[in-house]
Amino acid sequence: MTNESAAQFEELADLYEDMSIWPFRRCIETPSVLETIGDVAGLDVVDFGCGAGTYARLLKRAGARRVVGFDLAEGMLHSARRRAAEEGLDVEFVSNLDAQLKGSFDLTLGVYVLPYAQSQADLDSMCSQMLAPLRPGGRLVTLPIHPAYEPEPTYYEPYGFRMTADRFEGAHEDGARIKLDLFFQQRYDASVYAQYWGRDAIESALRAGGADSIEWRQPRAHRVNGDPPPLAELDAYVRKPHAAIVVCRRA
Image 1 (tube, one colour):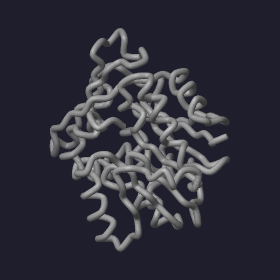
Image 2 (cartoon, one colour):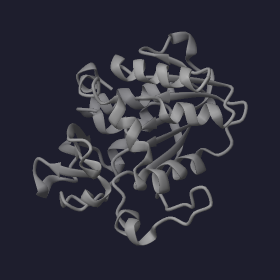
Image 3 (cartoon, rainbow, N blue to C red):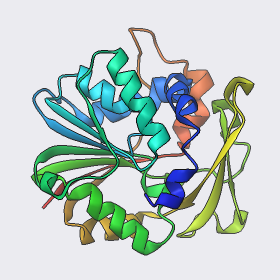
């Protein structure tokens, strides 16, 4: 993520933390990501673009040995450090990844990082940066905008956000600029900007960064705390999720 991209998140830490309980994230995204990751007991993990540290804390509570949260937005890191301390969790939060960390981690998680690459060169650089901390065979799990997301701006409004491409007819073109308006239950009114990158562009960038065994997965609805997911409420999102899950390994 560039410093320019990071600046738009400085004041959004509370919103991003609150988003973790939004129904589509609580019942679909988060459990799908954790299911994809699997058992982290004893693993060393980098949460790349950690934001307020929601996933970093989840992974630490799940038994990860070492968790390092990386983000360029100091406002996010301040919030992440405070929340981890309140929970008594030993998570490191940093604004740069020391070169000494290269090749020493088992897993990199990058949630909603790739959409903030503003050019193909940025995309290549981000993929390389996310893969660099991994040992050979280590895994990267990342969430880009879904290659087949629904570009009709109102489609995702029931889930608390709106996605509007600069040009509707070019919404699925590499580098297409997308505005995300966040307004769940009218408690927030904030916007961020992202870029769409298609499957070929992402896979090319991952391979250039040293990845192989690239796999795309579809998020699915899960039971949460034993309760069945509200399928009728979430059905449209399940059919056309706005994000995909990409898994690969460092060669």
